[in-house]
Amino acid sequence: MSRADSITAQDLVGEQGFVDRGYPHDAWRVLREEEPLRYFDLGERPGFWAVVRRADIVWISKQPERFLNAPRLAVFPDSPGRQRDGSRQPIVRHLLNMDPPEHARYRSMASSWFTPRAIERRRPEIERISRALLDGLVGREQVDFVGDYTAPLTLSVLADMLGVPREDWRRIFEWTNQMAGPSDPEYQLSANPSDSMRATTGEMFEYFGGMVAERRRKPGDDIVSVLAGAEIDGKPIPPFELLSFLTLLVVAGNETTRNAASGGLMAMIERPEALETLRRHPGLIGRATEETIRWTSPVIQFCRTAAEDVERNGRMIRKGDSLCLFYPSANRDAEVFEAPDEFRIDRSPNPHVGFGIGEHFCLGANLARLEIRIALEQLASRIDRVELAGPVERVRSSFLGGMKRMPLRMELKPAD
Image 1 (tube, rainbow, N blue to C red):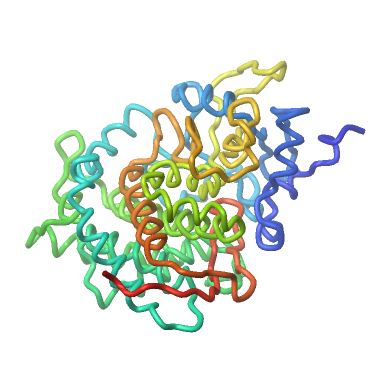
Image 2: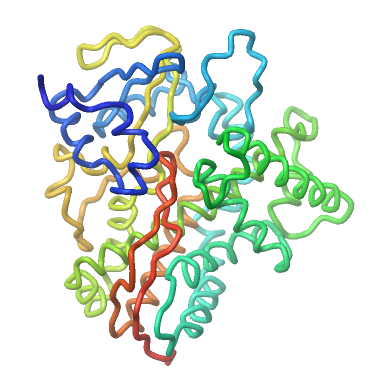
């Protein structure tokens, strides 16, 4: 038996393993070396091909007509079996499960809010929020880096872009946790993860449905107003797709960025020389940001569905088969990255796929980069000492890699 033969689907998508051990980098490494396209049978539930090399992920991602985003978003271990009558409807329908040409039409509606120029205009406000949050941590004996810094930073920026009033920010935070960890005992609303996600989605739809109605009466300078007034083929966006789009923005605009920033500091706590280098050479912040994204890869996996029979790496992928793209594995591919298991804040070049690639490249990549950059830049300029004050608690999910809590003892300088 080869090393690859001993790897099971549970090793790759078993959610409790991500809580206990973090990402299964050892298993991904074995598959990259021995069996880069491996099929896993899940019995009554649809199986999947594990795609673990960067070259294969890029090849698949750049052929959206041959490899479809719909109907399977990701491999969820507790998802129901095949629905013979097709009666079970999708929970949401947005950019992540749309295909060309529809995908491009929906993406264009909000794209102007995420251009480099539009995002750069937000820099002063993001810097102000970051400074204020760090000011609140000065003199504290212990902090939770996620709850006290990265989560409120990304949440504040996102809520402002959506036009969500401050008194509702806590609800947005709770919804993102519930959507990211529907099987996490701390967040789930039901013992069944699918039912939990449906319950949370229902609450979000009701809330944003009210906002959409209000913005149609009185538009504001926010994304909800833009989408409320947008049209597809000369008609208003259908309610299900409109509310799904807003749900996507809430989760993707908050959960992944806060986890990348938290994971970046964690990497530097484990490697004090990296943090010291960044403090002494602040000009490295751009490279440090990209390395943080590569290293953390907060989106663990997305699926594609083959639209036709395709041969790749000596394997025959059949029409209708699911291909699970493991982005953290691609970002540790030794054929692409020198010393891939080392965190190097000066790494260059750094062709990671932390934001995906091709048709579905992350719409909010520019915003995420700026938030991560500012979060780490301002922290490095003010930190005198930092260490873990307890175990890091991770979200129970094999879809989004997240930290719930990151207790720290740290000493910060007052603002200049």
